[in-house]
Length: 196
Ligand SMILES: CC(C)(COP(=O)(O)OP(=O)(O)OC[C@H]1O[C@@H](n2cnc3c(N)ncnc32)[C@H](O)[C@@H]1OP(=O)(O)O)[C@@H](O)C(=O)NCCC(=O)NCCS
Image (tube, rainbow, N blue to C red):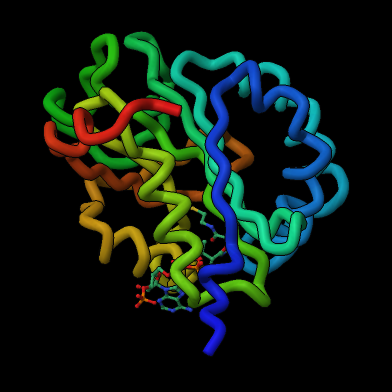
């Protein structure tokens, strides 16, 4: 019996090697984030594309692609937060200094995680996430996710993978409210594999 998961191939990239991959990420980004609750249109996808060059130049940038029969069916990427990051600036609740204090190499931030609809519920996001963090050196991982009723699949996945909500953040005046989640990155996980 063929297991669909065996047909999916995962590829990891750092900033320089990811630079030329906008053309394969963009269509998946456009398709997935057109869905509710994101409802992004051409303008937002164009904004994403314009930001790619700067994004891949971020310190510690990593991208993982999932391909099925050569076609990209999912991706995830993130980077290490700088000590002067604005990541916590839009907090809507008082967050403790213990949560918001950044120092070099403390926190890896996951920026996007997306799997095309026909390929969901096969563990592809789980494997993308695992590979993104594999061999990383940060002490913890953070991400922003729309509140649970709006993004149930993502919220449930993150809770299942050990993330806990620390508060709510509005990253910009025109942006929606997100739950900020954090998960420690165990020392063993940081050492267990070489970075790609
Ligand atoms: C969130 C997303 C990436 C999950 O992708 P996926 O490949 O289907 O996820 P997996 O199969 O690896 O499932 C991981 C876990 O997510 C949870 N999950 C996934 N889909 C779910 C759903 N529809 N309802 C509830 N939980 C769900 C489950 O806990 C699941 O584990 P299980 O299937 O072993 O119980 C995908 O639904 C997606 O692209 N959504 C739109 C984009 C998005 O919201 N991205 C996150 C932005 S922060």
